[in-house]
Length: 198
Image 1 (cartoon, helix red, strand yellow):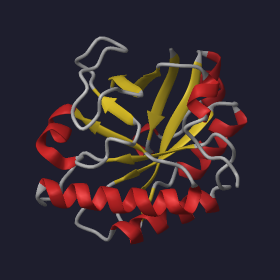
Image 2: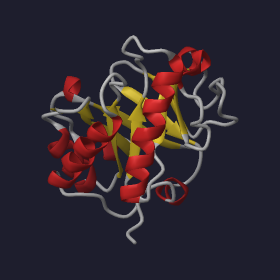
Image 3: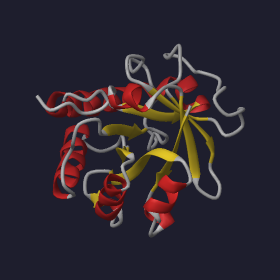
């Protein structure tokens, strides 16, 4: 299993070469939230991951009350301004709050966000979520997307998989002091799920 981490502005400056030296093979960094917020550390993280030869991932924190297409455009523009996508780069939607909307509204938002991103990049986004949120119906219609499941209470690499999925792709098994993940497969398997220039 490949070892990975995920980071956001909460981590501040990340020692990427140190993480790579400790066996981390892939990472996701928060890029955006909602329609106009950008993580001030994203560009530094994106380039730090790249320079340390990690498989690079970027994620958007979903705010389902907003316009999904506007949020997707903001996310893609933020990646472009940080240097853009290269072969094998990964994309994820962090789906963990409903913003007070009904589950079917949240799921519709997520499908529209993913559709826009996939249409413009060719990448099918990962869905990051946790068991009770998915179980509540917030992820309906997203079963074709690779599942990045937050399940720190499960043994590493053995999370319970919620519907609509039948298998997990990435398991976030620890959240302290940094979020730790595993991918069941090789680096080549992982980059196949990422960006491929047309």
